Image (cartoon, rainbow over all chains, first blue to last red; front, side, top):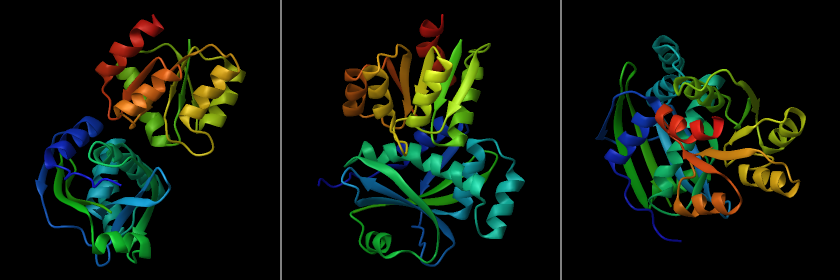
Length: 157
Length: 120
């Protein structure tokens, strides 16, 4: 299977700006380590059904992007961050952000579809292997207008 | 006119409805379904004139839904609203009879440009 090309900050910015309808700033950042930090892990499968790619989002990016998608007020998102876990409705919205975000992988490498979302840690074995030795890794610090800053990392086999 | 939105994400169905309004597409009855199977049942029961369907959904995908409509001879305007925007997927959609494919993320302008000629 061909390797995934590097995903660029500009591509991520354009996608989020169009999806959320807000000004977005994307800078290169430190990778999210979901084995140590409360985070949301999104898994993406390839056309053969195997684990191919991951998103690891800190709670701030997950909550803020989910809230911005459906215009949920900022305090609701901040409450989720403080609680250390996204409620079901925000998780559903964040899954949709990731679903649309799957196109970043699809324009850069093998075709993937969103598979699952889970609150971590602990990180399951399969995703853990990709995180330990990714074929492609992109780490972004992202600011969403009217919401705030958070971190998102993307990994592939 | 009835418009059926088929997407397994409740959030996305809400966003599609909101974008229809922002595009000035109003005065239509908007129906919803959570997957292709439910969409097929809604088409048979409600006879919408336009279907806006996601591609990747559990139970029955958007492509399977479209094929089912065609195989049963149901005549309805059908287009995808999906994150599947590669050339291969666009070709597959067209080959199977989809009239358009709107990529996510979308804008109200895109909705207006593509849907106005169908709805008017």
